[in-house]
Image (cartoon, rainbow, N blue to C red; front, side, top):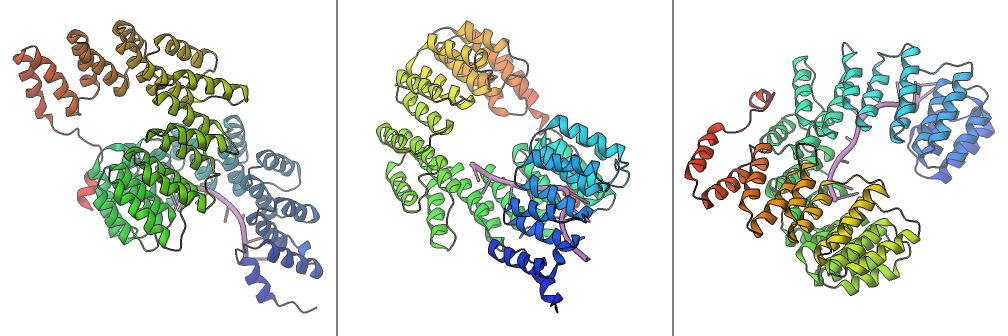
Length: 551
DNA sequence: CTAGGGTTAG
């Protein structure tokens, strides 16, 4: 039989998104007995995996007696991609026992699977295996290890792997920069970037994405602008990934005009980019513009997804505009998005924040599938309207259903106690959260507790709660205590708290002014003057910024 | 010949 090889190879190299077509190709290969060949088997396994037919992929693997490393690797990757972690690992174990030895790519697949599954002890064991196999300095394995450790919040471990490599390639540099960006260690990311440039490596779109990821949290707009400039010069700002990050970076700094300019320069803005801009406008308080863009997107051929609808509803909740909320509710109904838990929870939240708790409860009642988020929204709604007992009733119902409460559940309950002034119940639920449900109290929980205790005259207890926390105490918690002190006229405690706030945030002038006001209220002009004299310090010196000026 | 290490918003 004459086989049109050219046709076959181009078909196999295409990323075919139709399962039917893949099955036809597979059937054709079976007829020609080419499916016995590990080369073709690998292709078919990959095509089945892309179309998420993992059983057919496994079947092809089983039927192929002559298994190449490529075939093993593809099968392991296929299992990992379809979240079948256990299968991926056991396939790897089988491979170790077979008469073929895994290569760097095999280990990379397994390492990635461990990270995706947040399995630290397995990652450790595989890392050991990598070293034992003599692949400890293999660039592919090292990149995978750096990414995996960063994903498990062990960036320092990632750095150790990186340091072992004498001449890191671009991917390895990028992996570490991404690790730093994702862990909020943006200054270390910048340092690595400077070091990378010193050895003459040119950044690509991954490098910029890694850097930009951390910058929005840094609070230093000039660095973000420097990176924007750099991406323009390297012609990377029209890349939709980099563009999306720039849009959200500018949005977080509330520079929506710049965000819009970046948006316009992107060649093919995708749903992510649109989302970043729409959410950006609403985060900057420009709700009308945000909604106008939402409807504009809707007029184009791309349709908003449930995540975007939920975010738009969140900004409508902030506007407390129930008319717009109803319009978007109608939109969700027309597009069958109201069954999505994220959308319906956002609807509950929107209605209750607009003052229409009853409508929120209606949405809750007709929901098909209720998860923890839906219960949290309805609990928050009851609390917001002062119905603390209803909130607790919902909480108990949720427990009866076997749902496990999370941090947000307790935030909602504590805020319900705040709104109703239920000090005793608040203390009790705070205790149960920690002891019974093993949830570590987060800053927002402490904020509620401080408000609750402070507003009922138990300032001392609120203060001792704060003193039990490790330094530095979150500024939201101290801020809550400070406003309680102010409203009940306890200027002595107010001063202590303001000093603590100022000491931990010396660069933020808000706290300097706060403290200054307290001194001024007591007529202590010398203290006011001292405070002002220290103000000449200027901006904190930033590490490794010279490259911005040079670029 | 193929697979295989590094992405983004909410």
